[in-house]
Length: 478
Image (cartoon, rainbow, N blue to C red; front, side, top):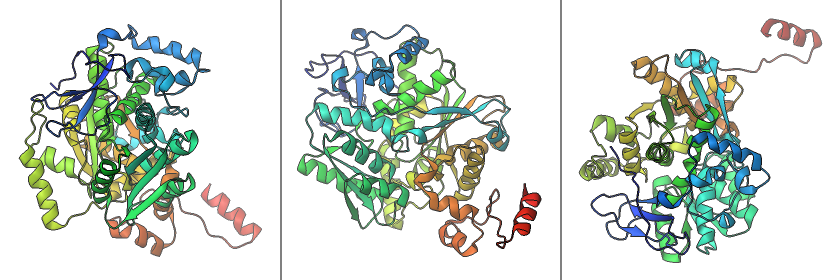
């Protein structure tokens, strides 16, 4: 079992000894003060966690005790769907927290989608993170990273992005005026819906020749050289904010733990955060069991699936086989392979949180699957028909649940929560192309990605400008 544990903090003037940073490598376990800005361990280079001395934190005896925070929604801290659970994310004092009211999201029981997946009625839920202020789940983590940046006096913050991270960073920078946003994007690898947000919100946007993985390498180099605060999910504070998605899922389910959490796998920040959330809740005695976790890759960006399901990479008590990882990345380089999927938000070949995700899969008895762009878009259409539009990457969770149900891994009686990470309007081009009557548009946008059909298209009905023809069409199709 992975190792989230009770621990005591080193001296920390910013956190009063409550929180600290710690290397995830059990052979290292180096600790850093909460006020230091790092994305990796100085000693061994591994990822960092935010850990807590829980003996110094007054945590509610029951998860249901958090319901009283709703009575304090006039306070910015408790209005936020992230900071409402401040006792479980307590690296920052209340007067330093940055919030724009993120986390006001919805868990929808989706019976029509359940039929599509193969679940019993009442057993499939969609956690819709598209209701966040910037339109995606990124705001959950960004408010936490932005809070830490503010605590440390940062004046500039940067990220590499396929779109949603850049939109979130740009929004927090614009609304708070606390620091300047600098965004690195790859050529042609960002939807206009997301790029428009970064530009509109005033971020310095740098588009370089390459993909997300190339942009990630450069933003790390630039941030280190110029002392710019890096807010990608390699930042451990991002993961802390993203834990709140699971707190809200439990809240909506009246504090009952579901059987499955199904989440798209891109940079693997969400899966890492969810695993950490459930481990901590179990450690604190606030839940009695941990749900299973399914991480779903797009077939065109399936690094985790290749390593975990095909090559047997595992957490191994914090000592995963690094040779498996380096050999696979060397193969990608040799083939000059680039991630390629309509689900641009998870179009990533080198996920920075790979090891933390392995830990989450270990703790949650997890599985990894991959789904095609065809399966993603068909699932997306089914989600949209239920009244909640999502971007393509979000629908990977539903397509993955359908696949796992077909394999018999998920039982029809299991209670399943699929995470919808972003709003439909993040990538309207894919939606319109799927439903279009224009075959050329369909082929240009989707055909090159192996999408050959629109099984659930809701196409416009073309009629002449004639009242009788319009009425006949309505009677025929309604």
